[in-house]
Length: 416
Ligand SMILES: [Zn+2]
Image 1 (spheres, rainbow, N blue to C red):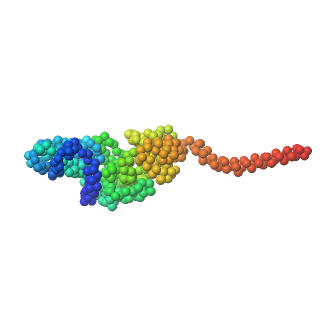
Image 2: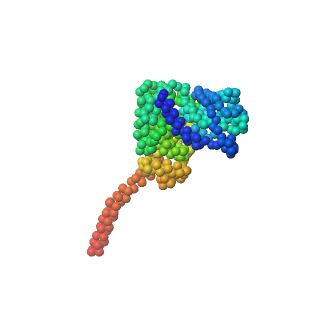
Image 3: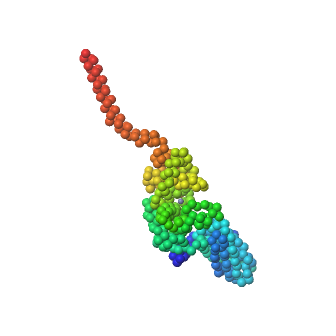
């Protein structure tokens, strides 16, 4: 677990300066800052423990230079805007305890929680402690870990070879995406492998989110996947781990504008680096194109459908559509597209600006090229150059020959 602890410490160390910068001054701080006396930092000995999905216990001993009038605990997840403020009961010796009900799963597994204390003393001044971070791990399972560079795999079912196989899948994924998505390993990536979908989904279901087989907490560099150990493990790992890694790398390449990208583009790119393309995607596309139930890409910009059947089709379409864009416009076309969406262009205008065709025009061409829809039109357009050539090579000489024959006949008639 040393590697895990070190990595978490590293994440905390990397996250902390940013956190401190992003902490918004609270009213109490602003008020005391305007007073002549400098504000002192509150000295707090604190400890946090948790039972994943149940509770988070904050205990502390506040050392204050004067009696405490009131005290509070403030905390939030690193990526949250809103801060929770809890009023504390403080004993005469400064000790205090607060238990937060974590049963609603508002904190994602392996997210970082930043917390600090505030106390108003008898002199009326409010003092604030230094912020600290705490890793909210899914401690329901005895995680084992293995690392390769800054990529770590964590699992609780399966043997050593299972962990090694996960790292292999990660390595294969990183090399597959090199040409499409810039790979950045300046910060660690953690892959948590649950042994079944139920264990994984239990981490989210109470929070109202429903994940299929994997999820990436892209900004934290945390990937959660479900891979049952056994004969089929390699196939699942080789699809799901590269896919979720791609999400992390896209976030690292694009920063917060990752969230401005159309979902079809992000999911299409991630699906393209899966080692074995899902064999059922082609079948889903075929059925939908025959039945006329393909989803317009304009409807896949902000989110994917909630029902699993339509979501599966959305992944299949996105994978095929983004591959088509790469084949037609190259990787530079894909980069241009992502950069344009990062600039804030909407789903349709972004395509026009980056690729010279609107999203619906691209979609129509994709339907023709990838799915063979409007086959007659495509066939005619593809044959057009040859038909022209045929006209020049055959028809023009024939017409010329006919002309020559006519002239001869005319001459013969005159001679008669
Ligand atoms: Zn995805």
